[in-house]
Length: 387
Image (tube, rainbow, N blue to C red; front, side, top):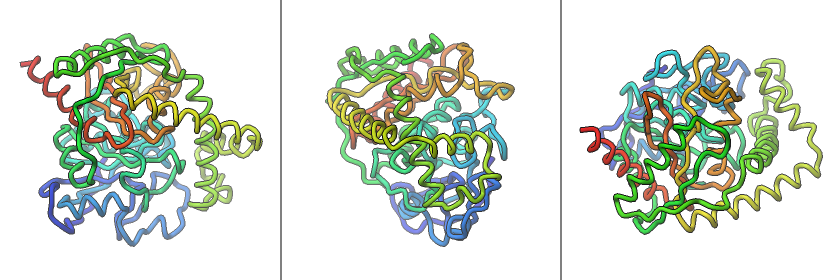
């Protein structure tokens, strides 16, 4: 659902004439910020005076803000289909849009905007992009600061953008000053990390084949961390960071714990109960994973599933179709590596047998523009094949 908010450009540049929608936990100066939660936010969060950094950059490059988009509460979920305002899939009736930036994906898919701002802590830009058949770009860590964005888990949180076409995101890359693209990258093909819909593996190989036609050398990805390694580390690191964010940066925990969703309260309580030894071990493992993943992507762009399954039904939003498994256990192992390592990642829309899956491109720091160009190659080749 797009709530209309009008803010004119503050400058001119590569985004002239483009309309941008803003996830409702990203500050627009003079407009109330809700994060889709009944928890009362402190005034400096609830009523921001200035734009978030990402909003300011886009407006300075010529973009017009046209509205805000619905988030999963506090951005802590991958469905945008919990309590509060919900977002359904604009392409597949009776399915969810994904989250937490589901409203941004919906707005792009419906043509309500050219660009939509999202945030990505564990795949929150890339997951709804995959399921709504749009392009989702999670930035390299530090490309644009997180200033003015309500935090979920600092250190894992990243801004991102969604658009219907990679070419639109390349215009945004011009505005953000990303590095020069390179075609001198091998492709490391990685199948699903957990039991997934078999079609998720098929389209990964299909995408790699399309890039091979464009001249990229394709090899198998070897030595990628296991799902168990990734998720064990991520759960502890995210929990600790979220606890600090809500207690210190936002200031609503634990005073308003009765107003938090039960699943968030449970996660916060678990985080509070972890020992110093457990936290130290997770931090050490996080550093190791970050180094390993960064080194791996220096040898090639990893092509892997965006989600591992199609979008769940609105009747069972927390279960992965065709797998009979908890949704998070299927999806997150494919998305959290980019957040743990601060790497850029792009979800390319990719369908199979009428289902939306998406393929993900994971690259080394600063390769954002390269990934977007690869996404564009895949999309244009698919378009030519469909003619």
